[in-house]
Length: 354
Image (tube, rainbow, N blue to C red; front, side, top):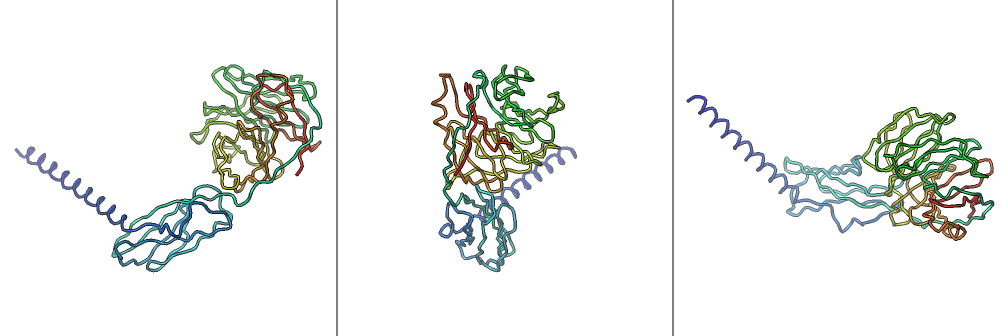
């Protein structure tokens, strides 16, 4: 009898607590609906020279004690009562900026959220180029990465069953050494940093680290984010990793963990499918998949500052199966770029200028 009474008591308590929780949540939602960001002072897109004016609407004229504003979870300022603030966007990374306001009123508080988009503030300049030399390229190579290691050109390729990294003589196409990936892997971009080769795979979320001199595999790692592997480059300290979207991730080579990302924009347009990467000076040169273009990207903000159209190079190929431009290697000794593509039978040495 006592057990039955306890069961009824526990059941009744659970029902009461559940009802109270639902009631509290409903009340919280009702309170949140009273406020919102003032859309009349917000724009959909901003540039780095703009400031966001943040102000809260108060539908039922509640007595507001204070408002704490946040941009990307960073405290942007506090106002007494229903004041507004101005937040300067200079130096912010491009992409969506998440807005939040914590409104304190009548002994309660609610959270209000919204977002705006930060885009690049200028049109990219068009670059030109001159072909210096034309070299043979293995037309069976589905090129994913291209980079110089001292005087030797390194190349990584894709497709399951035909993926590898190799050292070659770029003048003749002779292969010095090649390491094949297991047939289950679709190889992607690679970069060389401090005598280590880092290589990505496409959808396997797996990367490899080799000794650059011996090409012996030293470590296998998994990506720190649920992303694809596309292109890779480095600035001498950190690695940059594209994933087929507008994002370029910054990676710690010691831990292989992602440290954040930039979003690539040309003027007000988000540029997706950033592929093979090459860092030259303080800029990232990136192939845009299916466009036969190279975008010159600011690695701090994500803004495309210059664009190079290389579509005319494809007209010089003899392989009718040639696919997209993909492969950028900069030779610091000659100060020239070496570019090729997937299944291209030629590799071009070019000089780039404004």
